[in-house]
Length: 205
Image (cartoon, rainbow, N blue to C red; front, side, top):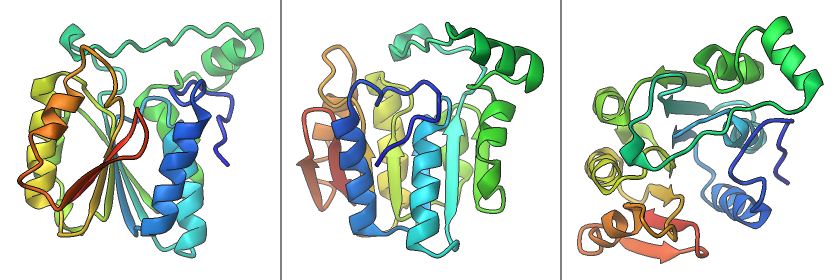
């Protein structure tokens, strides 16, 4: 099961890929999960709920996102933050006073697991090098989508994550993005690369 919690997610129109990701997490049973590209925290919340059950509360979730920083247009990622539902608009603008994709908005949304989560606001090329990636079992990479950004992120992750850890990249099938090229170039440097479906590809370090 993958819940949307009344928030925006790229998985809304592709629930099958969401379930594919969830099933891979169930198989790996990671204790430390890294997500690059948090957006409004929908995948984050689903992953935290799952890891909480799998590991009986003993897990760590690390999220990296630019949140409300300006995004370089070359990353090809468009964030649609327009709230059409009037009740949600009132809730986010007058009650919480935090936009759903802001750092504080996501932190509040994940507050149920505040002892287990670690959120970082900034660009991945600045944040990933300072993280202790050797303890990460599983990474969902859905940050910047330009070739340069994906290649840089994967270079850091593959070099620092422990052997047999897993990286799942989103948007592998998107023509014009740099995900496929960056992933395919790793064929001789990782244990395996496996297409889970058209959209998701699994890298075993």
